[in-house]
Length: 239
Image 1 (cartoon, rainbow, N blue to C red):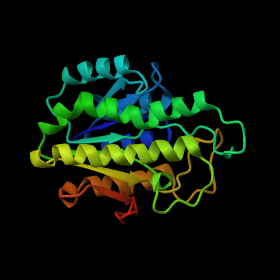
Image 2: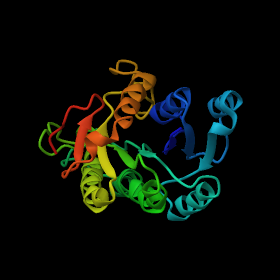
Image 3: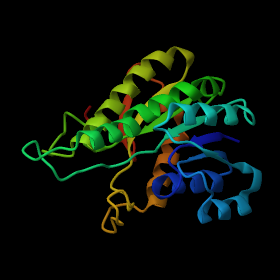
């Protein structure tokens, strides 16, 4: 039975990943931003009982992440798959000719780029104790420099590019230990990141989660000399 940790599980893709892993028999650590248990988490706890561990984890706070790590170490000796999913969008309308909100951009960068770094640093010892040894950073095609087509989305796109560099740096660090770190673009998912449901998006959260879980089931494909940046179907993306 795999032990999986997912961040940003309050709703959307993160919640779908928790549900999908539980359905496949995994033990799941669900890091949530809210300090309160929501209805979806309560329903899953009723079905899966002790296989679901809810942990308050605000990835923007070093103290919160360290406290969550201490809690996790209290009930498991390993994490087989760590999925850094927590992210925020920020402004996606302004160009360089508009008045940019730099404080908001720093907030996005703190969550999307530094958040996973905090989590990876705090939980890497548990990942290295497993045989599976896989870290998945949920990135975006918006983070691709080689395939960039936008002229805005500064906070989100730049934060995901930074996350991709984190993937490369961490992969280089852990590959000798038999571990792998991969950036995954989850596709266009029907979420509320823009404040309303993207109903026209390609994938439901459950569909996207299913593909990502399938990738995570085969960690050996990412135990290569170079780090991987792929879409949810495993197709390589240009860095």
